[in-house]
Amino acid sequence: MEAAMKLARQYFVEKSQPRRTRFIARRESYHGATLGSLAMGGHAARRAIYEPLLLDNISHVSPCNAYRMRDDEDEVRYVARLIRELEEEFEAVGSDTVCAFVAEPVVGAALGCVPPVRGYFEAIRAVCDRYGALLILDEVMCGMGRTGSLHAWQDPLVGVVPDIQTLGKGLGGGYAPVAAVLVGERVVNVLENGTGAFSHGQTYQGHPLSCAAALEVQRVIRDERLVQNVAVLELYLERLLREQVAPLPYVGDVRGRGFFWGVCEDITCLNWYLLLIWSRSSSSRTRRPRSQFRLSEGLRWVSMS
Ligand SMILES: Cc1ncc(COP(=O)(O)O)c(C=O)c1O
Image (cartoon, rainbow, N blue to C red; front, side, top):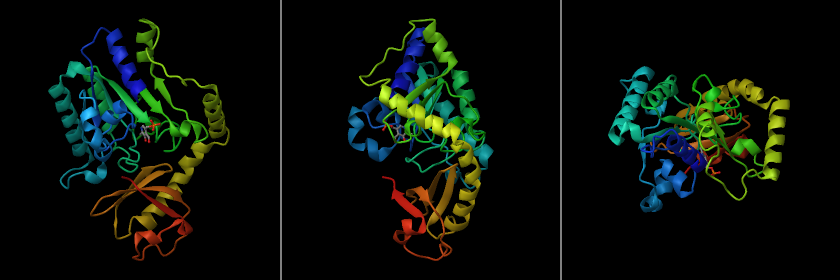
């Protein structure tokens, strides 16, 4: 994420817009643990003790979470409210000072696999374009096939192309520590016609072992048609979740895409992230303590801090 932030900043410096130093991100998001990416994230608990150390050029607006829509709103009104909030934030901080808007297209562990409402990212893209800011999508958690398309932004529900995109977990399939930043033509062209180099580097960047592992993982994903498989099985998984998990007494919301689903507990609204599903429970509608739903029944609940 910090590479993406630096790239966005360099892009504007090379475009002779050095006033652009700010970022707008969303509450209840997570973009990493190092100070810059922690500052970008809106995860209150993870930020708490480090607040005095965090960057002050980042502000946060509301996430897009259909479960939090007001009773008097439909999706169109909800999106309009969120977009108004974003526009107000651009105006408040100075629209010509913003490098980029940053978001997870499908929010990961910070909010519990929350996909956007239809039309949200298209409206976000339009706001960014109007104010001349970049759109950075963080697909470290949701990308590389997990949501049923190789990139989460390829899902029609997202439906926009980012200027910069981050990748991580699914890139190496857990076999190698590897992450990447994908850069759109618009940004590449400016750098190519300017200094010709991204002013950034790390000891292990482009590490051959990690790159080889990532390449092999991508070959397997392609050759075994894993992304297509997710898109097909998603329907089955969603049906099971809606039939067997959604009606449980403590469940407020079940949401997700592909193989990336979350369950929001009602009342306290803690998010529970459903990691593994092998559902064979026929009696899951009965009232039992959550602790009894275990791997033996195909469900594993992991509390998100
Ligand atoms: C959406 C998202 N962005 C960024 C990160 C940070 O990745 P890393 O821990 O590799 O820096 C994570 C980690 O969980 C994540 O879920």
